[in-house]
Structure formats: C-alpha cells, structure tokens
Amino acid sequence: MNKVWIVIANAENATIYSASERNLKFNLIKKLFHSESKLKNKDLVSDRPGHYSKGYSNGMRGSYAEKTDHKLLEIEHFAKEICQTLESGRVVNGYIGLIIIAEPHFYGLLNKFSNQHIKNKIKHHVPKDYTHYSEKKLKTELEADLAHELRLMLIS
View 1 (cartoon, one colour):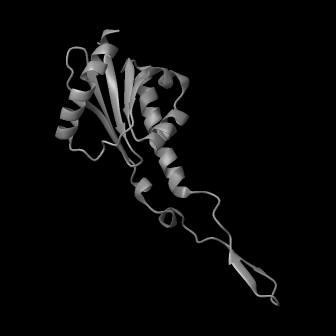
View 2 (spheres, one colour):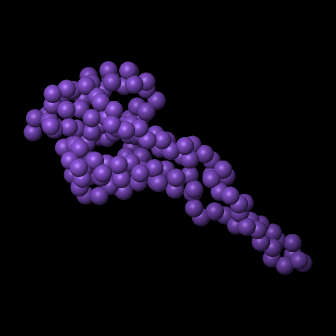
View 3 (cartoon, one colour):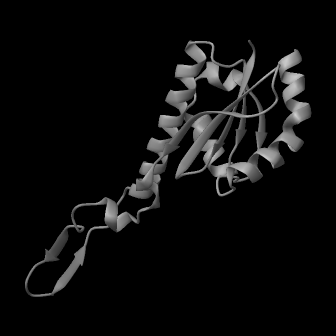
C-alpha cells in the first residue's frame, strides 16, 4: 500500500503521520521530543568559560568567549535524529513520499542532514510551525489543505 509521511517538526518536537490511498486520514507513526533544545546555552554547558590574566602589573583580565553555540548543536542533533527516523522508514519502504511542515530554518537543517534518498522523497514543504496545534485542529487544517496534494502523490 502506498503511503505518504507527513512530518510536522520544530526544534523541540516532531510528529510523523502517514496517509494512504485508501484513507486520507492521518495515522500517527511516531512522536519525537528533544527537551534539550528548550534549554539555554548556560544550562547546556557544565563549566563557565575559562579566564585569563595578562600579568600582574597591568591588571588585564577577562574570560574566553565560547566558539560553539550549544543550543544550535542540540537543535542540529534533533534534526539528525528526525533524519535517521526518516531513513529507517525509507529503507523498509514505509513511504513513497514526504511532506515536511516546518519553519524555514529547521527545514534547512533537515535538508542539510538528509541523504539524497530522503531529499528525493520530499514532495512538498509547508513553511509553517504547526507543532503547537492540538491533534484535532491539526488534522482538520491539514486534511483540508493537503488533501489535493496527497491525492496527487498517491496516484502518481
């Protein structure tokens, strides 16, 4: 049976639904959460930045600046986790196409960490963040908006 996966994601959570040619209703495949993405940089790092002193006579002191944005690293880890889930589904022929619903920055990260096989499966992108919607509201909005797109993907 042909299925399309609908991925609704942001930096903190992702929900993956499937829709088939027989049933255009959404069926939950998986929910992913990444609570570390909510944390601030200071909460992600165990130490404070190192300090330096340039001699005793001139009194120059300071601290080293962080070169790494730890919050961005956590968001990238989550994007990689989502891509691994999509790759696992692709390997077992779990879907014939993907619809990604994510704000543009996070979609860019998903695209960055997706292999070419997954990129070829992406048929449609909606540049919005629907992760805060209730499941009922989400299904009614998306079924109306994506019904035509899903039919085209499932027929071809």
